[in-house]
Length: 161
Image: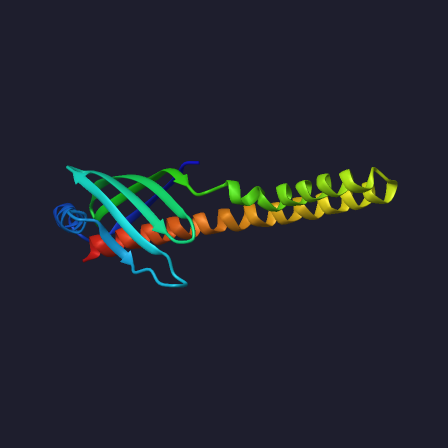
């Protein structure tokens, strides 16, 4: 998955580079973790007009986003081009309901033998598991978009000071 975005900000390129270099000199804690919220850390570096950032979210599972960027001078200020090159979120959890339903039905068919009503139940439960899997994939995608928007907001806040 690769996502490209750009933002025009009313600051000079030198100011943007200085703010980014100062903020990314050490890992930046964007959000402190607690029982409900995940701990979010951004780390990265800037060299010339090129920017590399890694967003790490430590929660119930760990999510990573790798981002590259480029600063370009414009008459209005600076244009930040960002490209999200990888979004690594744990995908195996998405298929857990379907696997659990399949395992349950396989084990229950061993004890009672294969009957027509069991086959109908199997079909309905597989459909139910597939629907839950689809819902979880949609939620996973939505959370990924939310993380990317949060990272973009953090970069804009850093550049603007």
